[in-house]
Structures are given as C-alpha cells and as structure tokens.
Amino acid sequence: MISPVRFRQALVRPPSPSVVDGLRAIDGPNPDYGRFVDEHRAYLDALDAAGVTVEVMDELPGYPDAVFVEDAALCIGTHAAVLRPGAPSRAGEADAVVADLEARFATVARVELGFVDGGDILVTTSEVLVGLSARTDRVGSDALAQALGPTGLPVRVVETPPDVLHFKTDCAIVDEGTIFSTARLAASGCFEGYEVIVCPDGEEPAANLIRVNDVVLMRTGFPRTERTLRGAGYTVVTIDADEAARIDGGLSCMSLRCNW
Ligand code: CIR
Image (cartoon, rainbow, N blue to C red; front, side, top):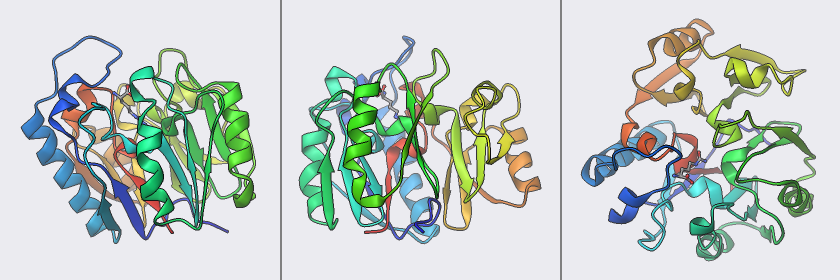
C-alpha cells in the first residue's frame, strides 16, 4: 500500500519574476516577487524539516504559473503521470516537466486527452478522487484513469464546488483515512467512508494544507483551523503563503511530493 502522506522527496520549481502575471480568478494586486521568493524558500525549508529531500527544477519564465508545479503532474510511488493543465496559458508546463520525471521515475505516462489539473486530484490509500472543475473535465479524468493503470488505484470522479478553482482548494488528506474539508465540499457526500475534519467556517482559504510525514503544513493566519488540527492530535507547522494566495495558489500546488 502506498501512503498518501509519507514522502521521501519533493520536486519544486522556483517562482520566476513573471509570477507577478499569474492567473487569478478575481482581479487584484500582483504578488510581490521578492516576498514570493522568500515565502517559497520558507516552504522548501519546511518540506526539508519534515524529512523530504527537495529537488529544484528549472524556472520557467515563459509560464507565470509554473511555480504551481502540482498542476502539471501526478506522482504515485515509482509511477508518474504528466497531466494536461486546463488553462491555455499553462498547457506548455506539461511538456516542460517530462524530462525531470523521466530522470527519476520508473514509469511515466501521459494524459493525452481532455484536461486535468493536479489541483483537482486527491490521492488516498485506496483511490484517486478527481474533482471536475473549470480546469478538469471528464475526458481528462478518463485519460488519467488509463495513465494510472500501473498504480492499480481506481479513479473516482467527483464535483468541485461551484466557483472554487480546484478540488483541493477545499480539502486535503491528513491521515491515511482522514480528510480535512470545507463544509461546502463535505456536504457533497464525496468523502463517505472517510473520517472528515471540517474546516472552521470563515477559514476556507486554510483548507489547502498538506500532510507531509509527521507534520501538517498550513498557512499562517487561521487560528481556529490550527486549533482544530492540534486538538485532533496533529503536529502543525504554519508558514506564510500570502503572495501565492494573491494568484490563487496554496501549499499543495507548490510541490510534487514523491517516493521515486
Ligand atoms: C492558476 O490559476 O492556475 C494559478 N494561478 C494557481 C494554481 C493553483 N494550483 C493549485 O492549487 N493546484
């Protein structure tokens, strides 16, 4: 059984100065490049402290959102799948990650049809949940199911709440059988059979957190979420990710957590 919360390595891509032009659903101020770099470095330090070997890929200045490397690939054990990001400006990020994956993974498959962003994929011990969204469609989900053949994990297609960028904007796996989820996503019933910890009302932007080995990594500034997780027995580490948040990024999207 492959654990969805224990990782030996992480692949990341530093933000390039073009990150200030990153996509955002609601028009707002650009991120500050210098602060973004600092926050990204702190994120890598936190992964390192959690026991993960961080490997840094090249910057991609032609792709402002390339720092959100999770959307271009999915890694499960020694198998990787190259995805098809649904935003036209991000499509080329898939080709750009192939060589990095082929250098590390025993098998690399490609999703060739439809669209699927890694932010819409939640891996558990028994299945891979794929949330349909503005970035991920059914054709892409079916193609992903094929691409994941070597893992033996079935794909289950679910819905992302309306007006939410990605499925994992609203949820995270925090333990083999436990999901942290916003109330609006949990209400869809897609987590039946799992323990669910519900994100405190009003702290939804904290839901895109990551469990990495013995710690839960979450954004600073969400005290009720932190208290809830600590109360449930988790070791919580908080880091700033305000600049990524300006362009709809969170903690999961800035790394591919791996076991190659
Ligand atoms: C985008 O809109 O594609 C980026 N600005 C943010 C992507 C965040 N990715 C993720 O949550 N997996």
